[in-house]
Image (spheres, rainbow, N blue to C red):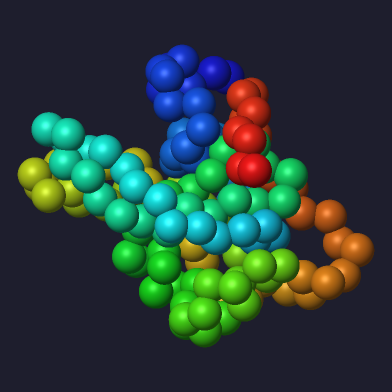
Length: 131
């Protein structure tokens, strides 16, 4: 099944519809500062997280940032190589509308980041060059 939102030009960012209703445990590859442009051209600084094997990056909102920091500490360099579980859900936006979003499960996933355990990347069709 192809979600209609996958047909828009948002090729390098990870969105809830990319998860196709499923949880994904992924290994953090890198965390870097970036900027998103929202409604009416409003610019906002956010951390961007890339995942091993994933072709899209996640703009980290404050809720997800706090969740990861609660598991692995506030130093983003310590997050690299660590596992997180992404899941699709909904939230209320600033206009009071219910919108889809990605959240990170609170709790360190079973397994170790330095093990040989495979982690499934989110299903994506386009590539993102993080380098």
